[in-house]
Length: 283
Image 1: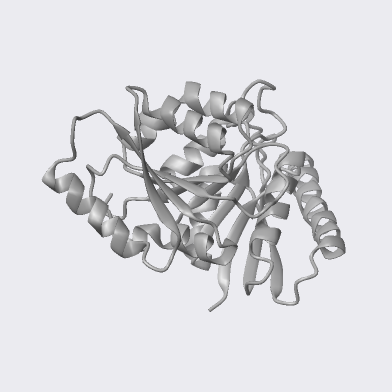
Image 2: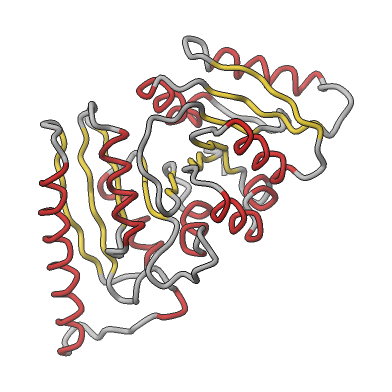
């Protein structure tokens, strides 16, 4: 079955890096890539919205710029993508970024969104831009992978999966983590940040479920004793030169505590690691 992958772009360098990463990650897989440009505001910045009336000259000019930009992107992709089983489609929408992504995810039955973390209008010192964080948190019908600036694709040496072992999850929620681990041959490192003396019966049960889900993959369990979960994840990833972080975004809990604005900013500056946000399908 062909994968359907959505690639939002604002034509920035980081957006191109995300597209390149996606192409390389799935170079041996049959994929339909949908490249989306949303043109009613400048770049990804929600506080810089330009209201374009559908019948005025300005709207026509903005629309034309979007379409021409997508055409140039397709040409650029044709020079670098050597896969015979990749198809590319362009989408130009007059909408806000999140609503446009949600609409395309539903209409095209998208499997995965891959986007850059830094648009043209993000502040220089913020690598995980506010709009990327918003999409990772609020687009809950498919996984979202965020690619930091200056990321050049190399197969991940390992994928770090932080978990408390306290919250419920199902195998289908981990499907894309398992899939990426298989196609890149990357081991999964399950990271538990220990705040208790020993695992409870419930935690042991969820750890056992992960062992079932990861059967056939290379994986290992690791424990760090730290009060700050985000700091622990960052230290673990940096010390091991890990290639990717994947986590299940439990609504209003794990995302808020681990990928809050200060930590996202910190990770973006000090790390070059893509982050895959999976979703709790019960929320």
